[in-house]
Amino acid sequence: MSNKDKRILELNDTVRENLKKMYIILLGLQIVKLILWFMETFISKVSVEQMDYEYSRNHSFYSGYSGGPIINIIAIFVSILSILLCVYAIGKKCFDNRLFAKILKPIMLISCVHYAFYLSLSIAETMTNSNNLTSAYGEGMAKVYSGPNFFGIIQFMAILVSTVITYNISSKTKAIANWKKEQEKLTTI
Image (cartoon, rainbow, N blue to C red; front, side):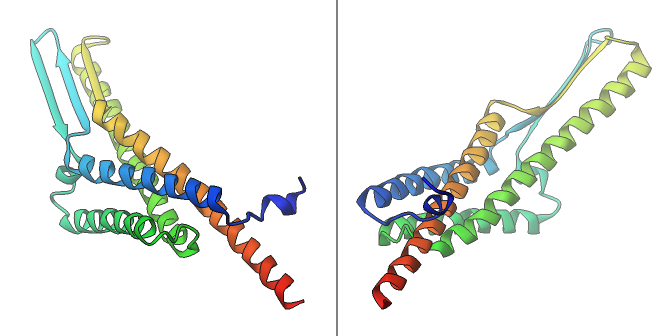
């Protein structure tokens, strides 16, 4: 198969069914992501055995941005938009619509960047707390963890799989658009 053939995909029942499945999976993942926005997906733990001190705090993305409600409003709006696009594509059976993929791709990229940013903040928090406690109590006397809990890992997987599926949908719809152009050229000849 030549490189040109890989960029062209005939819109047939099999392709429609595959795109439908991808949209259904994407819809489910977007709902999971929205629910997990409100759930406690990250944890911060500190324990110092010498002092019999334990600190643990769970937080969600929603609570993390409670001081900046505009971020929550935008994130929730974008999540609902992605859900509605998937529902519309499934309901109207317009799986080959390029516009949906063009809208969904930036949403998924923002989700990935946001999660990576939040994860890097957790890593920085762990390093700072660890350094502070080591200087105060000595090496190995304090245990520090800040990062995703079980639901945070599920959230990461949902974001990652959503992004992969979105890019797969995008490449397929682009190939279908190329196929349609080829069909138009053939009918005008």
